[in-house]
Image 1 (cartoon, rainbow, N blue to C red):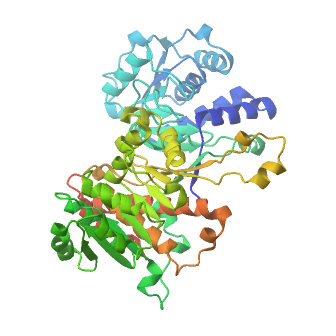
Image 2: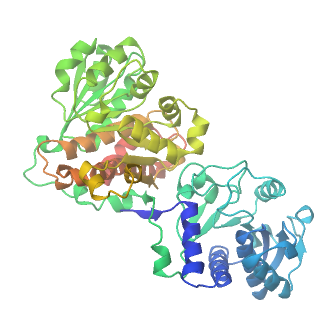
Image 3: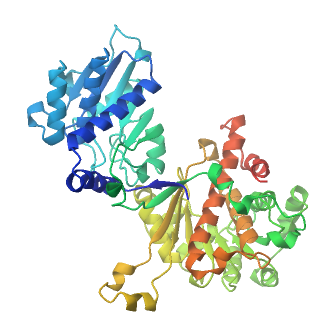
Length: 539
């Protein structure tokens, strides 16, 4: 399901296969890319009268040279900035430069560019970023850093060709500095880094120019991730209308554990989210001091005051799913409750301080023996991986996959473009014996990876993670309880994919509810506003 995503190297391989194995002319492909970008530019900015085209010395710069030539042919003024001597260019980029110069274009050195022009209004000028493509693998250096800074400071709209210069198209990390584009037109296939980390921040509106490639070349690489949205997921059968003879047992029982002293709001938010997203029964185990407040807000919840892990023990077996972490704290009380949860084999979702306690290593876990989902933000992920937040953010895909392997869990790495990662099935002994020429390491399990496309900046406020925990626990209970006969979960071969899809659904529902709430404004949007939006997205 979802839109296929690729690493930059995979798209480069598709491009290479198109030229070397399928016999497609490389310069013809570059012209296709330039034409697609120019058409996109005119569609978005129909009143453009001048382009400032920034070209590097590689094939990305070649795309920019094609755009510059097309602009001149359409009577659009062009300032062409080239970081390399035209005579030093090679291959298709050299052909593009020769054609551009023959069309009458003159090259401006990076140091001589003038960003303002009294002949044109700023609304009639567009900057084309064709400096650095997807091959970037180190921090940006001069003259690119200067041009990127000046382009961003010009306040002129920028169209990025394939990828904003400075953004790693595979990881979503900025390598030193990056163009901040109003729009990005990416070539051949969508790159995964455009949709997570800093990608959505610097790409602007993203569109795809698939180009006219042979099917053989497209099939030479398989997508490595998928881009998901609630708009598509809401049509799945699992979110269809409920049967007339349904009862609350059909929709599962969630037990939410947490809410240490001073953190009662977190457990209340998680309970409300679980109720509003359709769980049949919601129980809460929290500090006795918080029981009246939670009941006053959600009388539908069954709220229990627990002083210790021993008080919790008798409550856990009633649940189809346990959510632990919202407001749990890291005191001895929280550790006792987590220890009791780890003594069961009930499906579990862990968030917030449940993850921080695990990261300290004082409590052992049995996550490999049960269905489990974890929902860390980058800081919590870093603590679990014995790393730091900057490293996690620079390698979000790697971090999510490593966490999935380390904790044998489906992972939601929160943030812009939240990542969902689920480790697929290990190869069994029969598979190994059937492929004697293949080393076991070559049959290592793949990781299912998805990115949530929904969400907005209004979610940057307290309690949003607690709402996600409640939603996720609710959906897990609705799909994993004994009253539901789901063939995908019953079949070992399809179980991990079914779990992954379920977790993706929860993340997208949460973010879509936030988008609905944000229609009233992002600043000041509360986690409780998101809770109130959930039911309007469900049938």
